[in-house]
Length: 424
Image (cartoon, rainbow, N blue to C red):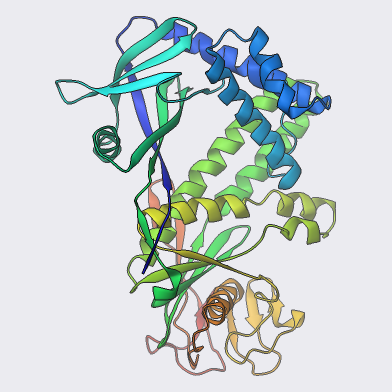
């Protein structure tokens, strides 16, 4: 049994500009930045959001539908601030270039050449175009060519931008006929526990826990604190333009790391029979966080939802369904006997006050998430007589690297590989 749903994927390309006017595209990204700033300024002033697109379009030297897409993205940033507060309130004094967002066949166009390349034409300014061919990975080019030629595909908005001074085009394509297996038809549930410096995964089937993994990414917490410190210093010095530049670098850094981690989660999940990825529904988590000023800042800025979203849509393209459960008490419950109390957990160590079971606290939470997923699907919960040793990997620039593990004695007997203990 399958559910049919539209699946979105972003394809990244470099622009090989052959119209001898690359400066025109750069000028358009500066104009897009002005449109973005004006949108944020009007929104902060309390102007009706429905009236903002027309007001901004009157003065912007851009194709009208392109201006509307830039305005929509800016208002989306304001909406995210009010709902999630991931990166603080958007600034209306951004400096430098801003992505030129355009609709397909209005602000930009694509076509196949006789040489097998994909040609582009971007309406950088009214009646002024930038032309050339796309360069990029074979995988992304193959997907785009399929979307241009085949049925069941839709090419959507794209963003022209400069990354490390190189012109790029990021194109959204949608497969309207891609199928995702119904979660009721799954055989393995992957419990995902997202934390400040790692994500813990547990694969649970009717036979018990198949495997478990903790993916460390401490650099995200470190870099966010470093950027926060730098922004405070330049803000106190009155250098708002540098403040905005640092904020943009932080967002790009975090987004890049989250995409890498989400790919690792999906790749790891694929090894199991008919997997279903289970997340905690953390939409309201910020409303319940009150741990003091410094800790509130750290926890309110955690990209929980972003990592879940990236993982979910990447899983969908592999046909893997996702499910959501109530996060209540997942970090306090003993995965072996079910005893639940706050004293069970001490930082990264879980020690049950009832049965004495010891575990990596985040791995224990991922087991509980998978168990809740089993209950939500109305399956029989398997007996958990033992848990495998926790294996850790750490995300680095070159990919995932195995991290050393330390084992400790446990009360609950031997682990799946014959050794006792769990890792730190």
